[in-house]
Image (cartoon, rainbow, N blue to C red; front, side, top):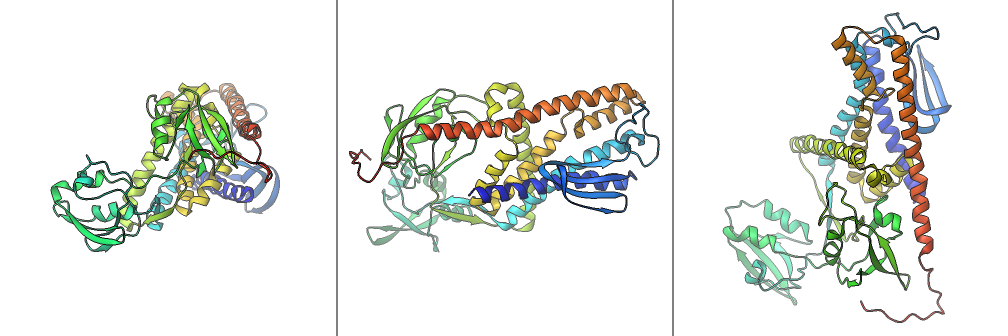
Length: 459
């Protein structure tokens, strides 16, 4: 599992960094700027070769990359570069285009990846096609359905799992009635739902709820830090018994930012875990999350044509941009609350491994999100970053002259300090998160030996 996470993370980060630096490289070449070095990673070179005026290298520490251009900083005597093939000698527009090309390459890559996801197929968790609780006040009950019934066909199309019920319904004209094939106690019969009642009918369908067993724990979320593990069964929340997975949102959702105690059964032992739900959207109220998912019974894959995938890819990329910038704003506006959810390479590797286990589409969507995150971060108006170069270029366009060499050097030094502090903070967060989880796991009771007898607990 660790090996898969490392490989998934290295491949993902390598692709994102390569695309970003390639954008700078190609634009610099197009603008006539000499590129001295194209590097993936930092530190000593693991592999290097030279072609023409440029040295290409892969370095030992895959925490980023860079394109070194001729004349990208003042000379030692304080003079600014003047040759036409040097970066700082170019016009404000040329420097802006070179600086913006890296983030633009990430944006284009994210969009292409999201388009590819639509064509490869988007996977959704799927479940057995058996009805759960069907209250006598529901539209489904009035139509003749009961708990335990199986929906086995819809307008003649065989139905083998839960999601296809709703997919098939969406494919039928809203003006048409639908006929459902139902199986109950080995006997089959049909019911017809009129066109006018289809929406309330399908909205009232409820599948059989899963037992409250943890299927996955999201890295970095409260459940991860509290020490919850895959396979844990949640018996109670603050003393309130939990019988099914559907009981959990009701018990946890309204407790945002309030510690609560989960009674958990693991390896025959019962113990308490304290966890504080958060609202990842920055709000409050009944939207608390701790970062756990139910076990997956199956997967439904939905594929789309090229034009539909393009539309979905562009829309999905827009949503990713909004989500990333929203998360950045929350980190700035509530740093003490969201600082623990910032992650560096180790966090990305863990998350990439999780997404790779879910499937290719999940991994690709995560790749798109990291591309957008790198784009957004590099566009911050901080010296050293692309956004800092863009800011200086726009400032020169407004003032009709560049800032002085002294001001430029001070600007870059200030940026170096800011980025250095930020990187130390982010990189330190990764091992601290792992230490916190390990301590939580160490506090949990150990597995019960075969000789020990445990009194049975209520389901």
